[in-house]
Length: 398
Image (cartoon, rainbow, N blue to C red; front, side):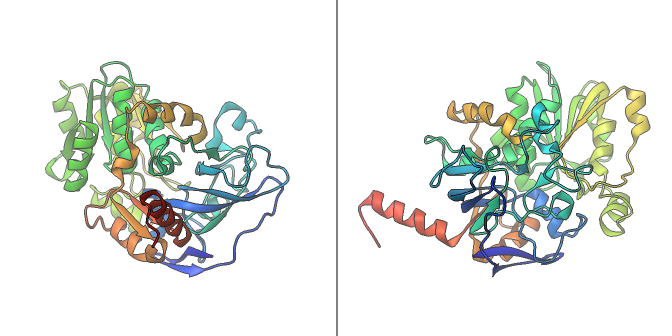
């Protein structure tokens, strides 16, 4: 099969790899119809996630058609079109029983650090991901969800991570009616966090970034205020001036370890790797939120030390909430929002790239070229299926 292959920092390519096979009774083999490049994939691409091994296939956001199921899978059948949450979870452990699927204790040998994630280094279990023609899906009896017939495939693939993560970011903020919410980061997760904040009753939503086209996009998509941090001297002071001197009620970190905005944090966190990424946004969020406010963190950081102003958080009486999104828990509500027209996930897709051109796709997304917001990778087989379907619908076969 054709699959994306990691060759080292800033080096990926499409190459032929062996097709995946059933290795456990609860496995399924899925033929990928769509996969995405996530902002979190860039942390791998840039060499910032521990134990990312040469030859690994990335991709934790994908949909596909079930090609084969193991004897222990009863909830799926061959031919089902499914969306696959980025979490790999058993459905039975202490955490899964509490719907904390991202914290599953049975699917990752490094479970004390993180739950299992498709295509996200051996720190997250060493599973190959969905930027490929086929993928092995473990625990297929509990993870994948059959896509409703009235749900667009492009909406479905964004339900595997980006939308649920943005939604959970807002949920963890415990937003009360009328609250002022500041979202740091205008990537896909930040965009969805801003949109979700309104669904939860926010009275004011402000998004911070420094890339103008992303700020314009989120302003139009999420009907929010925007701040270019390059035009601001002191972020906390600026937010307080916008909020009657108090600070925001809720601050959301949707950026993580590659945040720009502080030369010292960039040097120590991204280049010297003396801490697990640049903690710039953690400082901004803790210092910009009001006393007794809430900071919600969904940006990805490594599982080691970060220089965080914890004393400020204590003295201000803040609530800090953070986690990887437990995708499956949010799906019923988010599907309802989409079907009701309250949110249009597919509207953030700006690029659709053949899997063969994955190297160019990563470069465009990483370098923020061509006004790129969200990229879909399409395997050769999926393109053929879509072309045939389109031709049949139009009465013409090429």
